[in-house]
Length: 301
Image 1 (cartoon, helix red, strand yellow):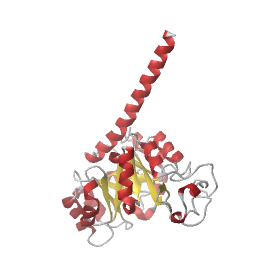
Image 2: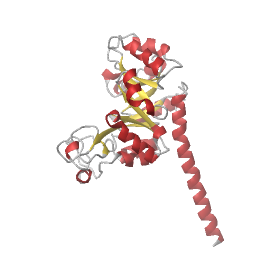
Image 3: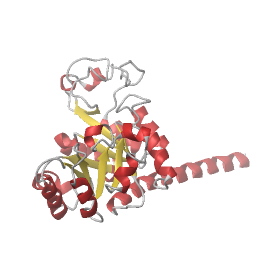
Image 4: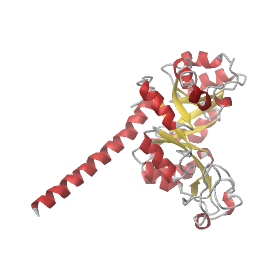
């Protein structure tokens, strides 16, 4: 009996320690962002691990956590009865067995559907709510919420309810003035990241205006023109002021230095973004491959 009590006590202690370590990891990732740490590269998994599980599913999120990513990018839509769910499209057709607009279906009805995988084949998995996703990631990793600015007051209520306010990165293409007016009261807790297409005229001025007005932790920079000199210029201008995030999902988001190029030669793709363009946050559809590359270079644990 004494040995059993000892065993139970040890198991309980291990559970507490593991939980504390999990909570600590999320805070460590946040601190890297806030400190604008240049010694490592933060890995963001696009729609979680959608190559092995349906996009925006709890299973895809858990798989991404297990492989060691720092953040997942998730998309939001709202049901007819006002519940926020994880889904990229406004329509159910591509990713579920349902048809029609998300906003025409109640949550109970959506719960009867099954998610499709990346090949469009029905799976056993179901559509999760944002609240379920927040409880899953709590204390573990950061979350980049896409399309959140449409519902942000409601989103923030859920963040407070689930105690996950410090794990959220919200992004958008609004001006610095609009961000201050709409989200200023949240910016002490939630990280806001401007998205700037630097192929456009006056984009450099827009970036520097953000630096002056709200001092963002990071910028998501987008460019398709490989000959654009601005990515190199901003790598120097933003050093120590803000981290640089690039998407490697397809060629027009980062001048062709995407996942496909990196599969053939990671130094020419990921390496160029890191070494030449100052990138320290990469959103990818190939998180396992990116993590392997970064670990080989000592840029990720």
